[in-house]
Image (cartoon, rainbow, N blue to C red; front, side):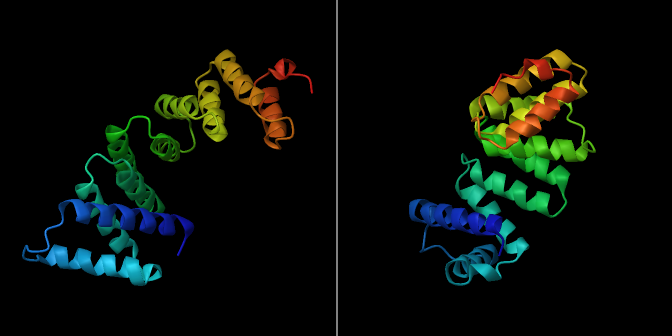
Length: 198
């Protein structure tokens, strides 16, 4: 089982059990879907490594229904769909997560990455905006800041790209190995003279 699947299982279990404790009705008659969900929950508890992608997706979808305001189930659905090479569906699921929390950084980054993949590697305006917002909310998202700057460069705004890259570069610790990569990128966009002295 991959790390992302283990995270998904843990989130599903926590949200599913919490949802059941809040809204569960043990006296109600079971339906086939309820039986299937029960079987999946038993797998999660007893043998999570045996979960199939379809079962994981079914559990996440149920969790999304049980927790309608939570962005996490939609985010993990998107991650699963993206892993299945379903970028359009993944994009819609990331958007569902963001409708529940417009500041949910993992979904901002995930949606931006999918847009880049769908654009054959080009960082279009929507992807650049999402990366920039993610970096604005969490400046530890260095890669998002870098992608936002690349989007500005690809759009032809070299000054904005250099400004964004310098801002990201300035926040890196002096011993961060990414400084070399950023220095090279600033060279490419013609702004190497703006690098702070070390």
